[in-house]
Image (cartoon, rainbow, N blue to C red):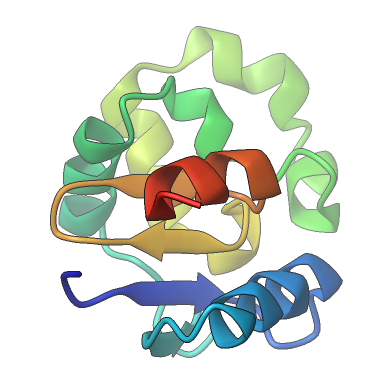
Length: 120
């Protein structure tokens, strides 16, 4: 298995569940605090391709920053580069956890998706 990085917010309960999953399955990983090391525009652009998901899936729609910026109304009028720049400006806008591998990016923690990825 290639090197894994999990990008989390330490106080996030879903991130803690994802970490517990990795521990339970004996999967080694690097941890990255999204507040201390916010993903860059270039990283996010690469991860968007690896995720094979719509860019809007990267947004933490339940977060306070998302709501305070009224992004539900603004995102439909933005192009992907504008969205990536916005995401790179504040890690709290990004849905967590992000599981980064050399060939795949998983957004959020859904056990079924993670089980499929890890062949469980």
